[in-house]
Length: 228
Image (cartoon, rainbow, N blue to C red; front, side):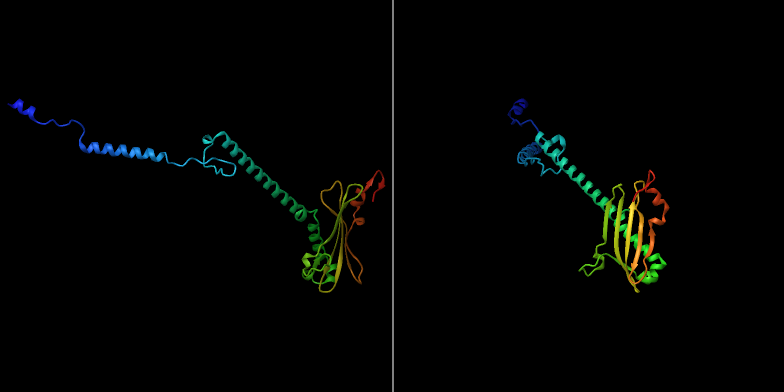
């Protein structure tokens, strides 16, 4: 009887528990949805000369994209070099025109200081602290905008000459300063040939004159001939 009762019992399915089957089904569904989402991801935009921002590695680029990146980097390099050259040119020009001892601006400032420091000049012009220097008179209302009369040329021996005239004005009188400088072939800086102040009604005040400097005269002698 026991054997017959056992055969009469309904068979139960052998397998995983219901909770495990449910978890497996959810996992499969999630994986299916994830794969479906991967198919909707946007394609990587192509890299061009204008759109390349460096976000993609070199190895991920196609041949055409590598050419585009190389072109962009070459262009950027040229821009940087051009900027460096331009900056260097600006600084070079600024040095030659303002800070170089051979520039007209430097020699103008130097000549003004010589006038202010000379007792003979301050006796005619007045207090050195009130002496003003400026260029040729123009229609401008600002003295600083008056250009300095400056000429630069070379003689037949190749020596550079700098000539300059400017006005000085003090509480007592006003006058004109004459500057003539020369750079000899064996020198790197300009030297005075003449530095003088003319004040109307008074004798010329000479601060520098080449004839009073034997070294200048002797440097112009060649094969016993005095060159001028």
